[in-house]
Amino acid sequence: MDGTLTGVYEIPEGLRDFRDTIRQIAQERIRPRAADIDRSGEYPWDVRRLLAEQDVLGLPFSEEHGGTGTGTLMLQMAVEEIAKECASSALILMVQELGSLPIALYGTAEQKQAWLPRLASGEISPAFALSEPEAGSDPASMRTTAVRDGDEWVINGAKNWITNATVADYYVVFAKTDREHNRISAFIVEADRPGFDPGKLEHKLGIKGSPTGAPVLTDVRVPHANLIGEEGRGLSVALGTLERTRLGAAAQAVGIAQGATDYANQYAKERIAFGKPINALQGIQFKLADMETRTAAARELLYKACALADRPERPADLGKWTSMAKLFASDTAMAVTLEAIQVLGGYGYVNEYPVERMMRDAKITQIYEGTNEIQRVVIARAMGR
Image 1 (tube, rainbow, N blue to C red):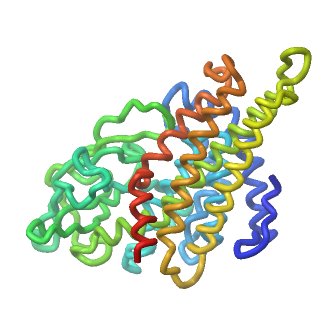
Image 2 (cartoon, rainbow, N blue to C red; image 1 turned 180 degrees about the vertical axis):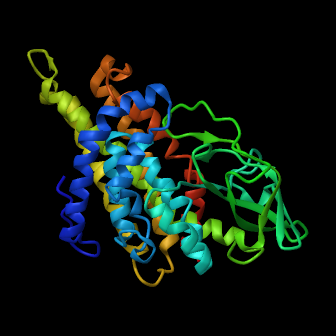
Image 3 (tube, rainbow, N blue to C red; image 1 turned 90 degrees about the vertical axis):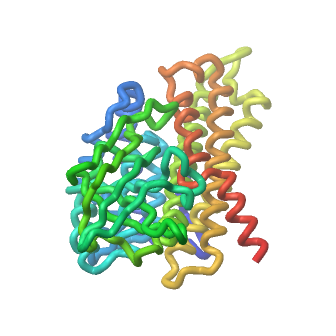
């Protein structure tokens, strides 16, 4: 696909050139590593260094803070290109946004200057710690607490499903600061603070090269200056962040779907059955046609939502569009990767071929950044206003 679009989100030539460069990097440098990353389950530091060197880690940030200043659409096109080859590597860029956007949107000038330039250069990595063992889709039921003690906050609790655990230099931690009124606040917690333990890592179905952990905080003290936004307004920080970062999950899903479609299509041209390539068989043609069509539709919805996110003034219906993009793209990725396995037949089921990995990686896109059930609630509520 040449990605040349018209209308509300026509892609400027400069961004198309940047996307093509990232595509080339992903194909030449990341694709050869993808199977090993999945097999070993180890964090790909070499890929992270590569993305830092190529300014890709600067994509979520403004020029003022050392980033590229190229906006949401460019960021998510990059996620898509990387995810085509390796979904675990795409998460490196996704969490760059997830763990920094609370500071970019709600932080003080001092917080932005202290953290964002070092993130943009790739010097440090962030994490976003909202979910808990008993509080996934319902963040208001979290049990982690933060108690004010003079000019410090003392944080106690446990988090779960935290991307970049053990790798991150700081975590945006959400904690109850007012139990009586069920109020949450957000804090920057440096990984080397006494009492902070990144916890055990999960053994997952997919995205194995991205560490997912369960951090524990025991009497962790942070200065009041580490409070992000207003005290008691942490839920707004979380939801305002996720409204945008779920586009990353959508872009990852589109990339996985396109990667699976491209691989299945190429395989079908070369695989001979009944004396001819299987792409001459209508049963296979229809599968490939549906895969390509659904993926293209998901991309259109993603780019539309990105274009809305890039507007100077936040559109009133932004949340509905980002939820629709995430919902449709992730359901598409799951359906398309299953069909890709079917096109490959027995070869699709073994890990010498990438489509079984793509299917395992696709599943999480329906779950994280807000489950698809939650996305449907967001969309329906927006329709009911």
